[in-house]
Image 1 (cartoon, rainbow, N blue to C red):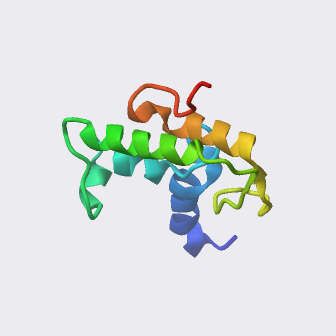
Image 2 (image 1 turned 90 degrees about the vertical axis):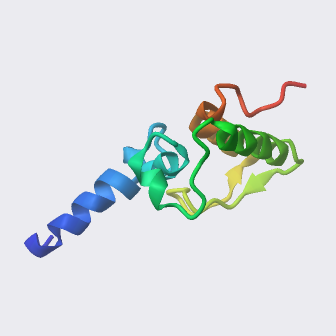
Length: 109
C-alpha cells in the first residue's frame, strides 16, 4: 500500500466496494445515479425524472426480467466470480432495487 494511492483506495472503498452498498452487493454509485435527489444523478446521460416516473419504469422493467424462467446468473458484481442460483440473484435484486417504487420486485404467484 503506497501512500500515493490513498485517494484511489479511498474512492474504491467508499464508492465501488461491495461493503459500501446498502445491501452488500451493488456499488453505491448505482443507487445515486437513479436517485433524482442525488447530485450524482446529474452526471448521468439520462437524468432520472424528478417526479419518480423513471424509477417506476425501471422497477417495472426489473420485474419483467426477474419473472423470466432462469436457473443461474453470471453477475459482474458477484464477489466470487461464479454463477449465482436464480433465487439468490432475485433476492439480491429485490433487496437492492425495491426502493425504486417501494414494492417488491418479485411477483407473487
